[in-house]
Length: 116
Image (cartoon, rainbow, N blue to C red; front, side, top):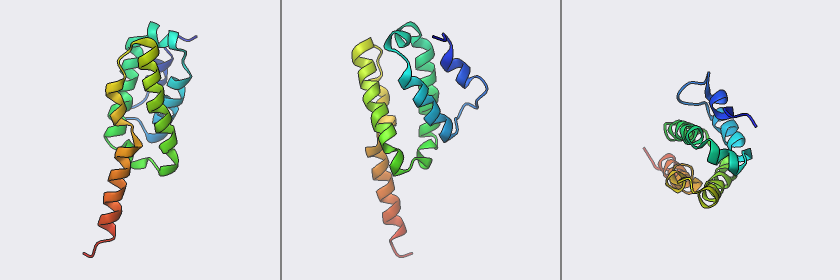
């Protein structure tokens, strides 16, 4: 398997990824075998950090409810990575949990429905 698959994907991307690239990166990451993650831990953590920066800096604004399942599954996968590899990924999960985004969506909806 390609040793630098995440670095190559991110090589010519801006520091803050487009939402579509966030989804592509999640797709690439979740298909990697656990043995690859262990062997390439630094590359994985670096890519995960860039994904977090992109998502928390505005990518989440493009996340529609139909995409929530992608992020739910990604959070579950991060738990699995933590359990199977010992790579500390649990601290990153809160950045992707749709539950947090639901609260934000509800506050926006509430604001839109109040008289101005």
